[in-house]
Length: 115
Image: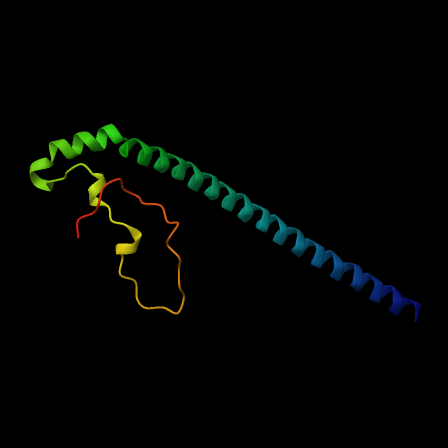
């Protein structure tokens, strides 16, 4: 009987050792995958920072103004004027049960908009 208990204990120890060995390798594999993902995230953030810097550089007002002047004949771009903006009460909204009081609304232009 004692031999059977020793054999069962030995088998349990061997089984636990195999389980611990497998868990150790799974954990190491997961750590490597996590480090790879962290590296990819860092690379993506660096690329995003470069793209944001390029976007800011390309959208400089003086550059856009120069491009508009260079391409004036093709694009026919004109500077914005206040009379090109309408007022909120000129917008045709679909009928609604909700009533909005626009008496205290702020005008966005100093001139009358064209009808």
